[in-house]
Image (cartoon, rainbow, N blue to C red; front, side, top):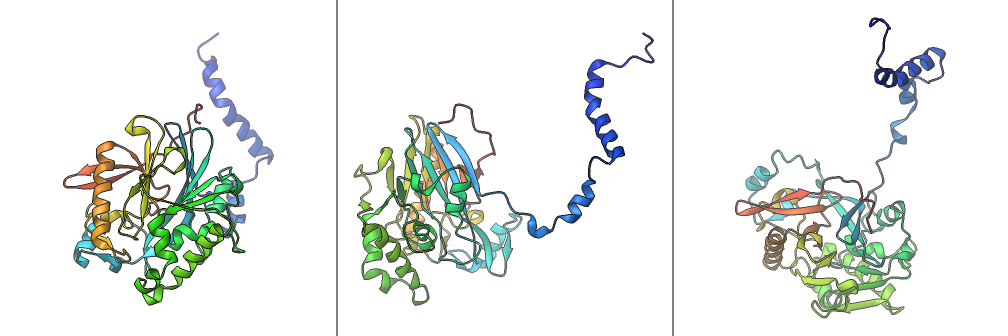
Length: 345
């Protein structure tokens, strides 16, 4: 065959889809893309469902997005405004007049054997529009609230606790045991919370009590003391007091090696662009700022040294990643989007 008329078979196979598409366009069988886009209203376009799966050893972790809140720069304590501005420069954290965009995340952990443990539950309807999507995203991720065996609270602030109730005030996780540190439960159920909570925030005391009471009234509220070994699946409760009197983080093991462990640390960090670089910067709402700083420093140091996975309630979604040392402070290394291995638990 003359070289001028010969076509390599691989090249023919490669070009065939484009030749076919051209023929269909000429015949009018393929609608014009521009017309389709023009006909689609921006109101019809939605963000992808807010869930993300990560395998950590034998654990299957699903990050659940509840929404975002805005935290003002002025609520960062321990730094001057100039220092805060310098740390936020070129960090591109979305910001409005209401404050810096801050994610609210919860985490569903499937333990070896299949037991489902939810750590924190989001806001439900306690904080208004734009939040309250934990259950919605849990369902989108392929789970049902009835499958959750345990809900572990890092603390009883409404953006972590209100989601244990549905819109009718009933238990959103009807088969789950709600587990909370004993000192945290005692604080919110006792008189101290009313006297120590600022007057304009005192409504959160009632929110906490309603949620706790809904589970305690049916015998499904269990308290623990860190180190007592009462948590399911060998989960270790780690004292990280300061943000609240009983604030607790959870170390969950998916294997013997450090790389197979996950620390869910709740509210140790609120302003990720500031507090990794300056752990001594605290949040105005912290009940005991000095104690909160000590807890943050300890967990940053230990997470970086051990190489644990970390999950944070107010880190950019999915809030999963690692901590690395950077000079005398730390930096956040977010998880890289990855497909799940075929052998995932």
